[in-house]
Length: 613
Image 1: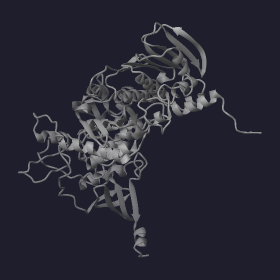
Image 2: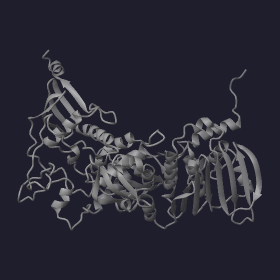
Image 3: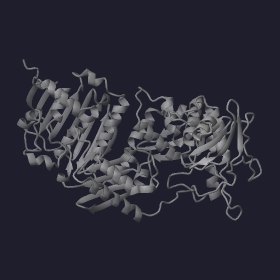
Image 4: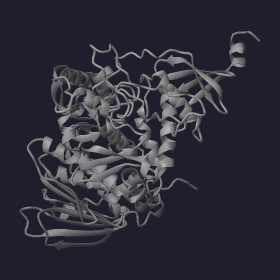
């Protein structure tokens, strides 16, 4: 007897839905793509309970007649392709005829549609893949699809949903990505009755960039318009110095479709070259127009990934497009208050500046309080009886275009031989630095190598957690900083304002995409505070928490982006201060992310390696 059987239609539809519909955002994606394919110039999305209770997508597109309304819920029924050759010449979002049947099989689905020339429309109701009713209905021209109780008949899938805020974030990102290539289409998003964004149609993209990412983001972007090898690259790329900690803000589109493609990411990275340091990513919004025959969009169930016929041509064209615009763009300007002298600006950033005619070098040690004679410094004492130095004054060369200092300075006091006596650690002697990344320290039993970035991350992490809730853990900014952020970032701050406040961040939403930074933790430096907040939010949103609420440890761990970086220049005093504070940590041997801070090479190991034993 045969053991192979043809699966019932209801089971095969659920399997297909598992590939296409991963979460509520997948439903939004499929329905909005259909609306765009239908020629709509206004699309409205209403969400309830992060999409699990209800998703409604309304458009003013061409609509469907009675026959098409019934056929669209059948598997593999499509109006996009008719012949084998059409698969290799796809110019629409949809083409497989899987999305609507998949959605209807795992939800309570209602379709109302009417063609513009028709006097009445059609309503089709489907529950779990079974047609409940199909009747004529009076409705507006276009199409409205309502999905209720998503995953009601597949409870196992429902268990894999994340927090409400996480699912809402994915929905927002999905609709934003679909709207960027089509600035002429009006998009509206409502969640639980509140307006998330309303972006009217425009002839150009910049107004939409302002709506989604803020004016600061828009000002930092350079327009691109480049063609070669039958490939056209348009859009916007970030100026030199404007970077993020993840690739999340590298948004790419091929023939109007948001995609992921290694060839394009390689082209972006090569286009910036050494202008972007390792671990940082320049934001871009790039639109590629290529012949449909050059790209295969049918390699992923959700069509997120694409494959190119000649990926090298794609990479090289993008590299050249970015290189050309960066070469011809003006050098970044430094935005400072011209009413303040340079010395005051630097002092506010924790830097003491002595003019060249007075002294040939910069001194990056912490300035003494104003009640002591000017230009007098007291080097910190590195013994256990001395007060713990504060590492917050460590000068980190800024990475942004507004920096007023860099790495081109010398530290006359950076000489080996200074000892640090720490109880429990013995006497440690700082020997020097390797590649401005590792501190080389002599201990009683051998050589200690310390990763300066990992060590400072540990120090800052424990300071933030131990200081949370204490008034002295926060430093008020004399001049609050105004930031223009993306809508997901402002929403994240609004929902987690109390948690940020516990850690010393007083960030006040001001409406739309604007926030005001009134205070930051005392362990963070004031210079480049805006960039610290942006990177902090990027990390938090990119690496979402599995917990139901964002807790102190998660935000504190992300805040460690402000720690000194690899290749940052530290003086001996700063290295000694860092060493003392690391020794005072509860868990000094690993950073908050689990990487080691210290590697110990014993004398016995050295003797073994050199064959002395």
